Image 1 (cartoon, rainbow, N blue to C red):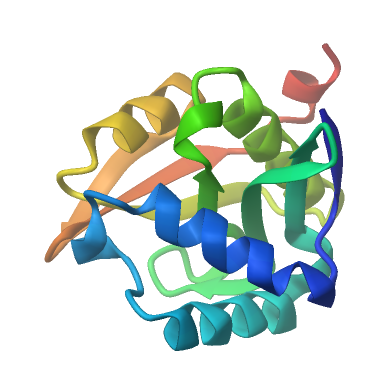
Image 2: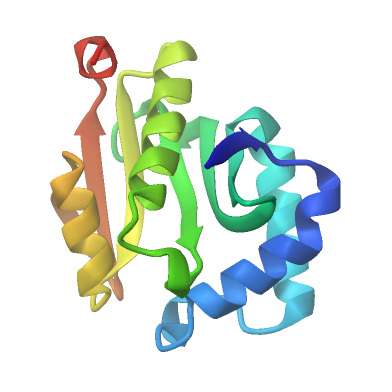
Length: 159
């Protein structure tokens, strides 16, 4: 598996991975190709160095977008906001999502963020379990979203 920063040319692959990843979870997703392309451009503009892609055999299979410029109104500080993590269904449960998340959190730590934050769909049980297994805790609920946070500890990345 190869991990690298996203490039603008990755937009079409992002659209495909995103739409396939949200099948069955459409209530939490952008639904049109136009909206997903807008979302890609927005993520890229927020923090392009925190926008990371995973490739397997030169095929893009997943993305994570970590925004280290995000001001959390809940924490009243700038955090590492994980806006998005998607992995193609056929490539799940192979450690790709965990590796992408680790890269994103390491990036946030390198940017001197002390906390990671994210929102996950209330009924997205697989994702909530994944985040809990990766050290996030549920700290609130807003409509259909669950807010989760994780304190970032440099010692976790020494392994």
